Length: 475
Ligand code: MN
Ligand code: MN
Image (cartoon, rainbow, N blue to C red; front, side):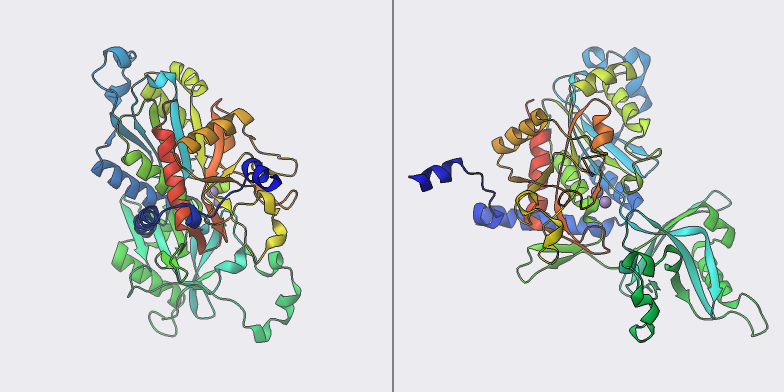
């Protein structure tokens, strides 16, 4: 009898492979194929936004137009023929952030169901004057972006993605190192034979930011008497291919990212190894959910912002007024936005860390997310005594719990490591600061922020189902 009672009263989170039927597992694997293709199509914030717009337009979304927010239009919900229930609109923020919405049956002034993910990932940015030569080699200086463990970025193939805006105002897109026959680039490391001094340093000190210089060429231009011969060769090749000169680097955004495609991992192909799961696993979940959505009860909003990895600052970050302005568009004026926010609900869709058997000591097992156990919900992030976190209310957790239960979405509680082990943040607090009930939920990741991160296909699929449940919600 005690056993019986225990079964009924005890909470147990199960492995999805023991829960889902073959059909659903197959669906999850098919979903993962689409996700891998999405990862390959976008390895920078700009590329992700461009690919999202491409898919959105194919699914009937149109850019929100100036006419949609005219003064005459302020009471659009009653009178306007511009924005109506079921309309599908988007707004790009400089090609680096994106908001999408499907207008609901009730006015957006009565709130929206919002999911927000970020499109940027840790990487090595080129400095503004990156090109130099040393030891008869040409190199690029870099400045790392986001929280990286620097030692992970040496001796792996890197591709270069980004844009250069030339002096004449022309924008040149650069992608080199992804196709099989294109050259790649790399940062060198010391051979172990000469690592005596390096080995004595701490992991954080042995690799400095100024060590992360990318080797880009060794063939000289001109004769032995010429100067800057190695640098010149690179400039000649870049000029030939892109029509750029050295000064153009000043107005460029060039990012070195791990070269190569997203791959299935494991004998059973249950995992995906790729660059940028943080946070593109949630970006894709949101995107798929909103593109497949019919006319919801409440307006569904998909936020894809930039700059999360460096604090969500700036025009394209989630702290930007660009989002409030977009909501002003939907509600017919900024004066209605506060009212809308108060009646809204937001999932901050971001990854959490999955329990890693190689490093069990950083987690507290009862509260750590596990691979293949579903969407990881984080009531709070932050560090120390929950510092820097918006710490969702019990009511907010309960609402999400009920929504997921009603829609067959399996989820698990997650925390970012055991107490006082470290910490981090997401866009949740910036949404919550707007007076929107907000909670973090997303895909558990192994090796987060490494050049190659790992996620489970079933968890990715569950996150998509979770966001779809939010968008389809009757509340
Ligand atoms: Mn993230
Ligand atoms: Mn991150």
